[in-house]
Length: 244
Image (cartoon, rainbow, N blue to C red; front, side):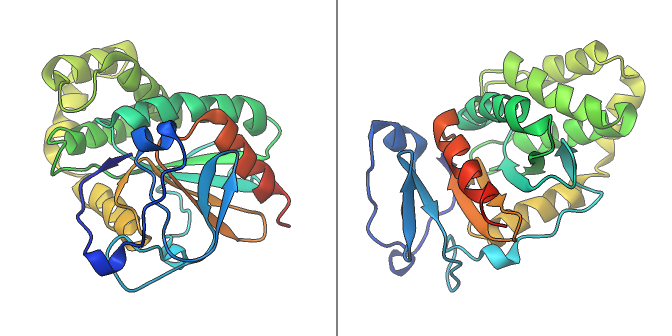
């Protein structure tokens, strides 16, 4: 998990290394009850009081401003806060596409994408987030998801993306009017929307990307930190589906 926020010592309990994969993903177990499901750290207890400490009750409700793949009334919602320059987000994009191919078609799971550009380490991420919003404006929801998939497919992550070339290329591939796309991208019209997403991610305890919240049918929330493998995400979704 890519991280930019430094937390004071009193806000961080002992870090627990579960396995090598979690070293790569940067997973920290916080205070309170945790379940280990499929080798994954899953927090179940909302917490408050310091930066990076979970307060899942602060999760903003899903609205028409969100990007939703699947049935908006699906039993389980996976709300992902993501950064287009994050290498773990690139991997998690593939994982969630696989999840949706299994759980999305029958209305069990909806995937909600929100922006969490870690601007301190990824200077291009906010503009890329704005580009995805412009794709959505000009081409509709399908264009947003196609933009995200294609962007992660084409780019190397960690601010090594040549956005002057890649963004117009994707817009052209999606059949968007290039001049209108460029005008939208330079307008700053989506800056507040992206910032609102960013601030909500921090409010609920996000310190890195991807940072996801799985919402069960009964409203119970589970946090999922890092680019977790398919097996771990699937295990958590199966648990959430039982919470009715």
